[in-house]
Each structure stands twice: as structure tokens, then as C-alpha cells.
Length: 310
Image (tube, rainbow, N blue to C red):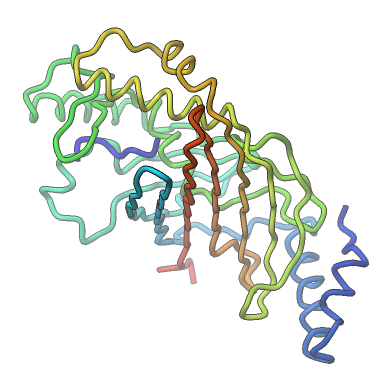
């Protein structure tokens, strides 16, 4: 493909009562495990990243839609390699690249990698090698016989593809792969961009008895409408239909009744790193004619250490 598409610290009494309802000593030890892990994650914490650390980050998405009129499903997977270049006072200097076994042909299809960024705590990625990316964009356009006039437009091959030429778009591509959170603890506020409001994280145990942190949020219906409207605009551009704008596409969805939830779960290892984040969007849409559609989108991001500074 031409471009990657992506578009309080106190455990509640209810938490203890649920855990101690059965299982005896095992459950007590599990509670202590959560508390100890929380203390590690939230204490004054020196950086747990070291120069030379190398991680494989895999993002998998699965979407299943069912309704009165049709059903569908789709799957996708993306892999990036993250390497710590420097540990600075103002944050981490990181390099993201495609996996080492990426073929020359596949690597030639994208200009975005390798990319270097600065990661400040609680802040988005900041691009560091802009000039290098600008030079790569130009070479990439020439290789594919494209002009700058094509930049920003959509085409269709085996899927919808945006011809992206802006280096500033790359940090946004990396955000779904970022598992660093500045405040991961029971009771900390957490928010997703398409949720109605922040919620407090809850410390829970997964099916394997390992500590996790979970946020259960209410979906913002407008976020769903806007995403669908943006998709409609893309389809219209590919079909060369100039009559569809973001405003008209949004207007067509005003009669739809949209409800849903977002559940985000973080798994943490003994080294205080988040090793997995799972987001589950459950969306129910009732159209004006009463037709109902249910969609479940699951996004799982796993982070595995390949090499450390030791």
C-alpha cells in the first residue's frame, strides 16, 4: 500500500469484596499483587527505558458488523519496531521502523520509516528528522510517477489509499502504537478521544489472575457520526462525486440513533511496562426506518522486548 492508514489511588471496598468472595489465599495474594504493581507504576519512577532497548509492537484490529440488512467482518495487522535512541531530560528520543524482515519491495511502498520522534511524558510524539522525511517524500513521489498535486487525495486499488506527503502526519500514525501512560493507577482519570467523558481506572484481575487496569466509557455518538461522514467523503472523492461534503454527510446521519461503549484494558508486566492494551468499541445504530446494526471493533496492541541495553 502507498501509505499506512490508521486513520484516587485507593482500591474501593467493592473491589475487595468481589475478590474475597471466594478463593481464599490466592485472591488475597492477587490483591497484594495489584497493590504492589500500582505502587511501582506510580512511585517517583525513574525512566524504565534505556538506550538500546528495542521492542516489537504489533497492532491488530478486528471489526464485526451484523444487522437486519447485512453483516460483514474485517481484520488487519501492523507491526513496528521501536528503539530507544536517547534518554533526555525532556523525554525519550525514539526511532520507529518497519520490521527487519520487511522486503525491499514493501519498504519502497512507504516513505515514513524509519522516523525519529521525541516522546515527552503525557504529550504527543514530536518529529525530529523532518528534513530526512522531506527528502524521502520527494524520492518516493518520483519513484511512483506522482506529482505533488496528488498529495492529500484518495485513490482505490485493493483498498482506499490516501496519498500522504506531509511529514507532520507521521507522528499521528505512531499514536495507536504508543503504550506509555503518565498516570496508570487505580482511580486515575482516563479518557479516549471518542468517549463522552473521562472515567476512573479500576484495578482488576484478568482471567489468568494477572493485574490489569480497566476503563469503561460511554461512546460519544458525534464521534461515530463524524468518522462515518469522513468515510463517506473519501468514497465520494474516489467515485469523483463532488456533491458530498463533510457537512452534507453529517446531515444524512442526524436521524440515526447511536449508542455504545468503549472498554480499554491495560496489562502490565513485573518491569512496570504496559505489555498490552485492548480497546473494544461496541456500537449500536438504529436507523430512521428502525433497522438495527451492531458493530464490535477490537483493537489489541502488544509490546514485546526484543533487545535491551544489558
